Image (cartoon, rainbow, N blue to C red; front, side, top):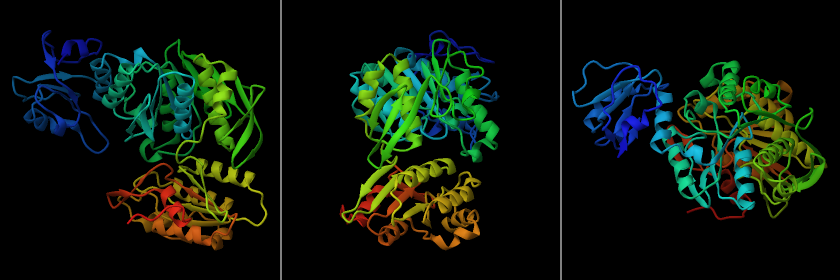
Length: 490
């Protein structure tokens, strides 16, 4: 049991008085999970309003209700507290409930459209190899030193964030790295967290179904840097036109990284092939096992972060040379006949263009073809669908449009939206195969030895959501079955 006045000591209340001796069991925002002695925080969501579930929460045993809108007829034994923003209060309460775990370790947040997972994960791996106990909160997994837990969101809810950070503290983790999504910032999931550093990767077309405009999306990202403390660092991509914008109002120590513009951390690609690339970072050479300009940016951000956190440059480069790519990010799979498959999470026009350009820069351009399998998610930003299709058609020799996670939408209608973006001169090199498994199979059969197949959009995901049903589906598994590298499950 936790003392309620202690949890709410730093929180501004609009209405409601808290008895000094009142204790609560847990904090909940889902009325179905409420048990006897819990606090229920009523959140106003995009689709539902928690204020409509207050009676259910009380029936399940809630003794305290936190609201934005005062309720006139609650039982006398239920304490009601009114605040201005329950999303922010939930995060602040979660941090206090777990005794502010983010203050007990070094926490770095990574935000931007693309590269968040790679930068956060490689930093986690680098610090592990450097001998530290490290933690990770990412799209792919939650890591507490050597333990792995499944990830459900890019940025989890505040209760889960603080629970995991508290578990890290218990396991004596000293450095933690987390992805910070625009949804997470907008919904105040990171409120109350004590960040020691923030990294900005880039900003491109994504999540406009949620933010409505690119300006709203950009300004939401900027808020993360505005809220950093004075003894934190803010490391931004100076080659992105929004990079320096992120630094305008931050109180943190301002730092930049770049391939083109002057920066504190500067890199150049000297050579590359499908097995890796030779980078020059701050006038020091290192061979790494990742490829592409986008990964040069990612590695530069990792280098800068590690350096700001006290690791010497030479030691950083040594570890960078040993690190492997993150699961589902430019993941290479070779067939016995010499066909090359690359599985990548690219699900925005910019990310897809980066991956395709990288492949085209590396491939020998003899007679090999580049075959791209790509779709677009349902119930998400529709405006990027034609853009992704145009990019795929322009930069590939053949494109198969297929399903991604159609969710509740008609897969065929999603592909129609994509095909609307394909210029007439590219029609002849496009196919549509709605079933993703069949599309991957077709790409594998159409490919000749030395041809390159890019399977884009899902990367590390091991599921597909069709008509609300979530079933197992893994792009890497599917192409390995087509290549005869593994057996098809019975």
